[in-house]
Length: 405
Image (cartoon, rainbow, N blue to C red):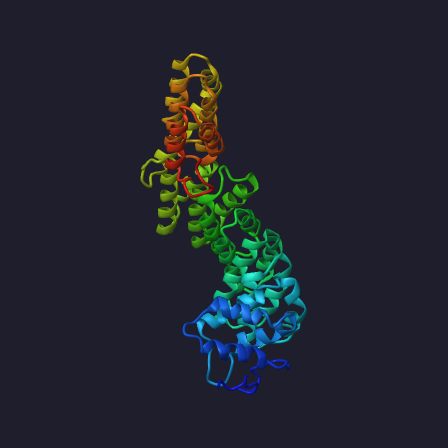
């Protein structure tokens, strides 16, 4: 038989009195006699103990079932699963007091693991209590919990943003990484809104943005892009490198002047990041020569401003030859990429099927996701242009993200 939970394993381990955990330990004991570990069955038995047993489940999750006896992986999973059944609304009344005053590390960790599963936007305060005065060893659990909250409930983003700005220097970057781990598209704007408050936090915010940006619909919203461009004016080399990477992955055409200026930066790593970003944005390789990049940018701007009205007229013309010529011209450029794609997308509605097919090819070559909704709509219509639209979506890497019809 397992020993009952020992509440005096070491002074201060258990920060508050707890009720009888015998029923929880008895479930674990019975499970040990089963022919094979069965976390799902054990979870059902633990959940059957009812709401009154939730604090006891948590105590055993935090401290284990007995002296010199830790929890097996399936036991921890079963305890977390049983605690998760009722949701965070039922857990808050007894969990909040346990996190009120310098709880033991075991209690903090168990709370973070539980909130990672069931937390919502209303539980950010519980995360803060769990981390108040916590040792660095809990940073990883906080990152997972932060991602879990945002993934389950985007309303957690704003309180997490405020916490990032107010948090100690060590905690802010952990929260930024957690937001990126959530893979919620809404997290990108939240991270951008936290820029400009603390210089030490900015590289982490920018690196998190760079992780989220490739999968985000383009173009990004202007406030986010404006905040990213402003980061190119910082003095810190790591921030500048991260800003260049973020702007490249955000595919921001208006970042070109700032990136070209960084080619003259004194730090080799900053120059290299700027060059890499320019190559990613343009598809060209002019090296670290600012004059060549500036000449290309000026030529592209002149072409775009001088040709846009004509190209629109040709794409809308009933003559397939004119529309095809305009598509060829658009697809030979890379700046401004998203605007190019949106103009080319107009040809997806052309009466001539060859124009529609070539419009799909042009969008694949331009490489912007700005016209993905129009391509998906064409693919859903079926008919002769469906295959071309599907191939364009595949070339843009949309397969597996929201599904290609």
